[in-house]
Image (cartoon, rainbow, N blue to C red; front, side, top):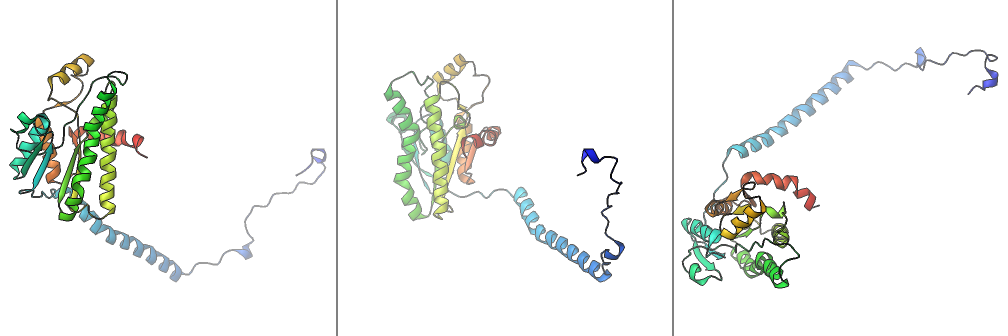
Length: 283
């Protein structure tokens, strides 16, 4: 770099243009080399589209072809919590498909009148974590989460040996979008969601998921209990959240079984929560 003291004393030298001398110019590419290059590019493009055709055909056929409905007539459905509400309605729906129904419920009187087998609906305590007794909190976890663990332990091996089975767990949309005064309930349903996700992954890794299927159901509030409706009204959200009829939820659950759906969201629009909030919960 020129010193400031030498400005005006050193002769001006024009910078080089950067162009190589004419003698050093690159040799011209032969027409044969150009033709070979063009042919190679055309061949790659044609190969790409040829390979793309069966993939595209398979994709569009999958969109237009309805899902295959399986036949569960003659299967035995063990239904926990099948005496009332959602459990009873699922029982009735399963019975219409030809299933043999076995009902398990603490309510012996109403359970004896129900013909289907579903999982326990669970309990929904509308209270703060600081309210209630330790026994109240323990009951929520035992009914809503631990009951699923014991059921899976009891029946999974037999299903694998028979090479036939379908396990349904009733979670909740609260496992994606928790609400105040439902802390223990939301925690238990988050647990169900994690349990079924891990369990389905285990079945897949063991190579038995082709004949032992799982379905996790995420319903919004279900109109089964008068005290629940009153509590939602007091909270000021009764008219701002979907409240489903148990018959509607039951039909969706049985449909999930018949079409081997891994996840059932009720209403269907609530599935967007799994995309919006799911990544914030799971890594």
